Amino acid sequence: MAKKGMCCGKRTPLILILTFCIFVMYTNIKSINQVEKSTSQMKRQFDEYTYNATRIINLTKAYISSLADGLLQRSTEEHQSAKEHMVQRKSHLSKMCELFRRSTEYENPQLFYRYPQTYIRNITFPTYPFHLLWCPVFKAGYTNWNKTFLDLDAKLDPRSTDITNSSNIDTKHHHVRFLIVRNPWERLLSAFLDRLEYHPQMKSFQRDHFGRLIMAKYHNVNASALPYEKINVTFQEFLQFIVDEPRQTKHHLADHWVQYYEYCKPCDIDYNYIGKVETLSQDANYILYKLGFISARFKDQKAQTTAKMVKYYESIPCYLMDKLSLVFFWDFKLFDYDLKYPACSE
Ligand SMILES: *[C@@H]1O[C@H](CO)[C@@H](O)[C@H](O)[C@H]1NC(C)=O
Ligand SMILES: *[C@@H]1O[C@H](CO)[C@@H](O)[C@H](O)[C@H]1NC(C)=O
Ligand SMILES: *[C@@H]1O[C@H](CO)[C@@H](O)[C@H](O)[C@H]1NC(C)=O
Ligand SMILES: *[C@@H]1O[C@H](CO)[C@@H](O)[C@H](O)[C@H]1NC(C)=O
Ligand SMILES: *[C@@H]1O[C@H](CO)[C@@H](O)[C@H](O)[C@H]1NC(C)=O
Ligand SMILES: *[C@@H]1O[C@H](CO)[C@@H](O)[C@H](O)[C@H]1NC(C)=O
Ligand SMILES: *[C@@H]1O[C@H](CO)[C@@H](O)[C@H](O)[C@H]1NC(C)=O
Image (cartoon, rainbow, N blue to C red):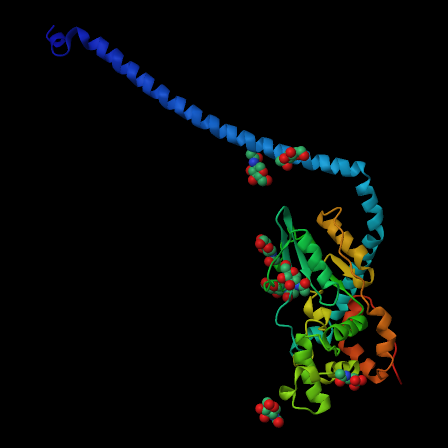
């Protein structure tokens, strides 16, 4: 009986009930908050799912309508011959690389000038999960590729220095790895016409640098004192210069005429597509198609060099052509070009 009077008396149950009620209300409010919070989170997630689903549906629709358009069918036919070329070139390259790896050039790199880095570009697209690996051989459709990529909104990374061989490449994200080559005789002439031949208005680094060295060597002039307008070298002098310079020095090689095997390392890097300037738009459209740009078209521009081949080469002494064919021997072999001279004079 004494305990009963110690506290609160008859109001005790009421207080307990009130406390309980307040506790229950508090926890309910808290969980209502939580429910609201998780509902809005779920709503956001749902919206995202819906968005993603719509995107997939849209993509599927586009794909189906392209099927309906016969676009894929047409593409398959259009690309048949490019596809065959690519398979053939790749298999030829891998056979030749076995020989190349036993060559003096490959086994004794100290005897030759080494390009300090490979100039392979890592290209990414904002709306596309894959990257593209491209060895941009100058005078082999370089400018046209540049334009095509710009149209596709591509981001061209600055020169990649870290790609020295295939083990550094994540092939899952780089499922397209390509280079474009050109008949080495045509490439040499094209480099000369574009970069070294005398044109009153044309300014070029190559004419200023290599043209000057060539003038000093064959015209007995003070190269550093020579005004730019007086730099006037012939095709034969240019070829002679490439042959005469010792192969350990860097003077005779430039981006525009250095060997493909040196510039792109085709026997160390596993390129899966080898295009050629001779079949450029076909090859390029196939590569774009393989990348997933089904209806993208390569911005082609016809090269004007072919028509000038005989005119420029027919005055070149055959002995010089013999020597040159040794300098570029592996470029011819690796990419299956005919070593036969366009012309030469006995
Ligand atoms: C929607 O797609 C993006 C990008 O593909 C992905 O990161 C995200 O997790 C997806 N959202 C949902 C809710 O699946
Ligand atoms: C899907 O396509 C419709 C109609 O073309 C467009 O309005 C919508 O923005 C697209 N949605 C996505 C997520 O791409
Ligand atoms: C190639 O494109 C880049 C922009 O991505 C530009 O800066 C560069 O001058 C272009 N080069 C040539 C040779 O067109
Ligand atoms: C490729 O590079 C890795 C290191 O990045 C090196 O260990 C390997 O020997 C190289 N392979 C060739 C064939 O050069
Ligand atoms: C190419 O660029 C992408 C995106 O910046 C990067 O994740 C990847 O590692 C790069 N690959 C190489 C071989 O440099
Ligand atoms: C070449 O020309 C430069 C600049 O005019 C001059 O400094 C140099 O002494 C000349 N060299 C010779 C060997 O004449
Ligand atoms: C450049 O050299 C060629 C061949 O030596 C010659 O025919 C031509 O007249 C020269 N042009 C000029 C502007 O000096």
